[in-house]
Image (cartoon, rainbow, N blue to C red):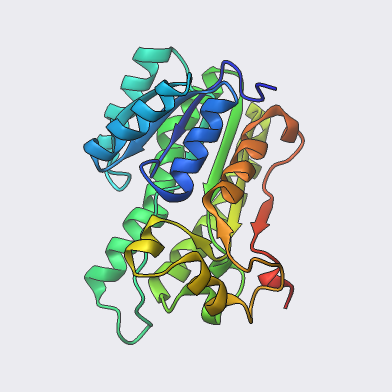
Amino acid sequence: MARLSGKVAIITGAASGMGLSGAQLFAAEGAKVVATDVSADALAQVVEGIRAGGGEAIGIVLDVSSARSWALAVDEVVTTYGKIDILVNNAGIHLAKGVLETEPEEWDRILAVNTTGVWLGMKSVIPHLQANGGGSIVNISSIAAIVGGFADGGGAAYSASKGAVRSLTKHAAQNFAKDGIRVNSIHPGAVFTGLAAAAGLTSQSMAELYGPEIPLPPHVGEGSDIGFGMVYLASDESKFVTGEELVIDGGWTTH
C-alpha cells in the first residue's frame, strides 16, 4: 500500500542513519522524496539508490542552521514539485560533554543544528503547508528530552537541544492545528547507525552496553525502527494525532 502516494516530503539529515532509512521508506510508500544533507556526494548516492529501486527523489545540499540555505532549498522544492506536504526535521549532531566541560562555541553549535535547525525548517515550510491546506511535520527529538543520565550520552547541550525540540513541537502543534498542520515528535532511544559504527561500535556491542537500560531484545534499535515511525506520523493514518511524543526506545523510559 502506497501510504504516502503523491506527497512531497523534505527529510533533513537524509544521507545516513535514521534519515536515510526514512527517505528509503518514504520512497517505497510513494512519496516524492527531497533528501537533504550537508554532503553532496552522500546525497547523490542516496538519490541514486532510491531511483534504482523505482522511487522518486532529488537531493539538495542544506545547512539546517542557515536561514538562507533553507530559503534556497524550499524554493527549489516548490519549483520542482509545486508543493510541500511533509517535513521531517531529522538532522542532528551530538557532543559527549557535560555542563562543566562544554565550551560556549560548542554549546552554540549543537543548539544551532539541533534546535535552530528545527525552528528554521518549520518557519520555512509552514507557509507552504498552509497554502497547501495542511500537512505533517515530524521532529526527531530523543529520549534525552524526557529522562536524564545515560540517555543523553553525556551531552549537556544535546540534552538541552532535544528538550527544546520537544517543547517547540507542542507549541507548533497548538498554533497551526487550525491550518490542518500536524506537528509531532519522535523520541528514539539507542539506535545503531553509521555514526555508531564510525565510533567503533557494533550492534552487538551496543546491545551489551545498553542492555541493562533496555528491556526489549535485541536491546538496540535500527534506523528503520525510527523510519517506520516517521512514515506513520507523516501519513494520513495519523490524521487525528498532533503534539504527541512517539517514543521508540525498546522500553528504556519505562524505568
